[in-house]
Length: 256
Image (cartoon, rainbow, N blue to C red; front, side, top):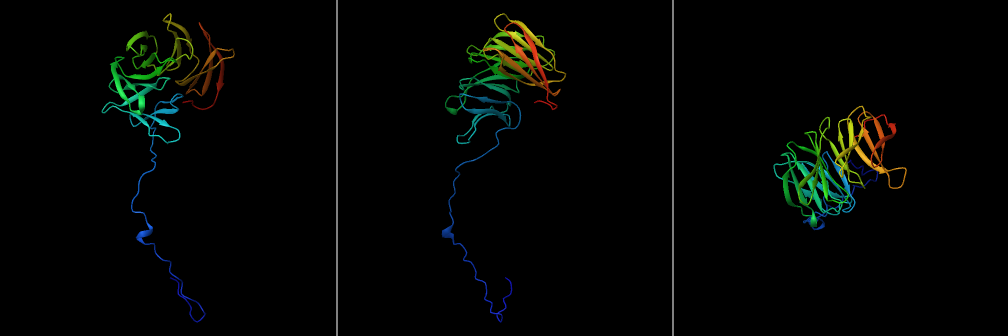
């Protein structure tokens, strides 16, 4: 405390009363908790669930955007999840594990239960994707192949080979029974009805890191947008029996 000059008419400062124990709460409870939900890897949005699927510490988390509900956590002890896919209905998840196994989890009620595990490839599966109906699932593998599976019977319907390196991305066409695969700087479009290669897209000079579908110039048409580490975004026109490069856009930074 500062000294007080009593001769100058000063007065000693008043002490504030200290709070007593009766003013403090003795019992505390958690009303909400915020935790990390992403540590790297694949991220996807499921419109039906209204939730975001992502990888967190070798687990798959399905989290809400507002944090009001607890996340749906899919995990397998001692077998890390490398990548995953969620069907359009938001009822099933398909995961790839470090052991090389694929697993099917049912997400009903927010409590995942494993329905089946199977060996899809001889090596690790690098990407998984459902088609628009949820009846088929595609797998891309380090062994340079891509397979399509009947998700109800867990049997392989197609095995596409010829990729120059590991298949890093697989995606189904939004409307047609066609599969897009990415391996290094190449994109391939396969038709499931004829089991043939429809188009080979080679215009990137470095690894392709992401792809996405968008509406085409005509009603019912679709375009494929590819981004790579060559700092270029390519837009491809996807016709039923052929593909063509519609436009290249330099973005001057790596696209991931």
